[in-house]
Image 1 (cartoon, rainbow, N blue to C red):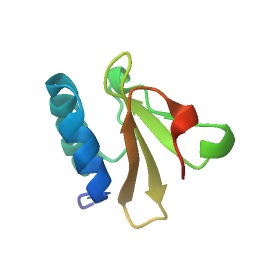
Image 2: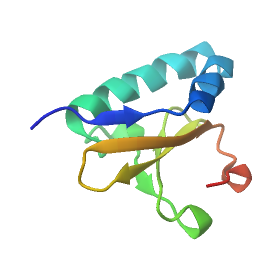
Image 3: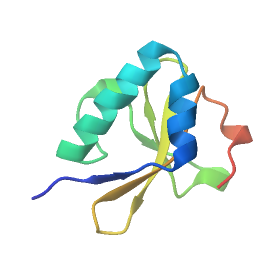
Image 4: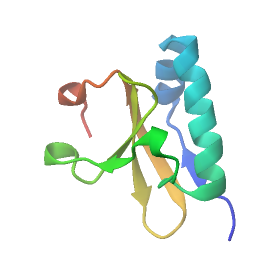
Length: 95
């Protein structure tokens, strides 16, 4: 079936480097899992969900109780575009 592609903008790398080490490791694990299996991981710990409101075309996956990775699935090309990695402050996110 092929691997999924993770599209990370340079600011995502900056956000991850400023995040706690635990979050960096969890994000790397999430990326590895998504590349192999796609964004809708069956393991319940990620709690992937569709967002609503201004972010309705995006999804979030839980990295821990506070931190989320916000992403969108780009068409049928198996590309995951990362919007942000945030400590659950959705109101500050701009598309």
